[in-house]
Length: 433
Image (cartoon, rainbow, N blue to C red):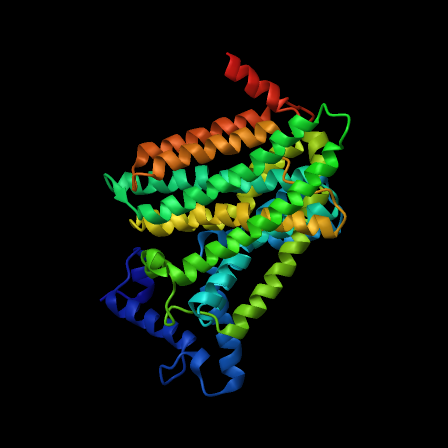
């Protein structure tokens, strides 16, 4: 029998050598009795081993976590005042895995809380990254960034993420089915969200030529009232989903809700992780937002494009990966829930919450989006509604969603920042024509 050195030199490992290495590896991870170090009775051994074991399990929970190396680089770049381009890129890449960890900690913390409180926890922190970035931008009075990032997150989820889900599942399966009742409910809510943006844009266009009233004050009044109504609608939707009609969402919950055995973090550990990651996200988001003005000047791209296309990639990266993976496993109810459900959180909770927060901060944050943005949102919602109304999906429908998203991205890339459109005149011209 060849020696260990000969076996390694020949590029082959004998069974004895393999067994020896496995035994040595096992000894590195466990005590002489075979008990893992993180289950040792010695507290001085158990706690450090438990921390290392838990950290490793968290890190391998999502592929996006490989980008965590950019977190210290992003913070250092901002603290040392590197070039705005470096600060933007490094913190852009850093927030992606942080969003994944934030989602992971939220899921872990929601498990022991039960279905109702867990659902509320997921609803609150489901789009925490977008909320944090937008709050910082709102504090800096970057209203265009806030509005564009909100709209961009919605479009990214209902077109890009959903389209990738349809393609991933369509490559493996000829056709996939999902709950039409849930899809129809989500489509109806998205239609209400579309109306909440179309009405302020239409009112602004109607009041623009009026000399008797201030269009700005009236739009603020309308936005504040609409925001409160949307928040109430979202509360009703949560009650509908988690309580009165929870059976409609059972298929989604059974596929995606982690069991007690699958839980990696305890309640205290998950809560601590949630706080720490939120603080780090806020730091990186602060550096990211502060560098936007310089990026706009140097790269000659608009704030609208940054907020609508680039920033949503940061917040949706983890959800994107999760949705595509479950769609590939033929769990389309869960994939639909992740993609469209996240869009509803942005449209019915995050956006109106920011309007109310801006009201409290004396910032003129409104639901009056530019006409081109409103039309793009309405058409996107219409396309998605038509695609999901039959409860079936395939790769062609996924291609349509992604194609629509690319067209919108190209349009906003060439869209001038100061462009305006007379919506009333435009609609009137269409009717007369």
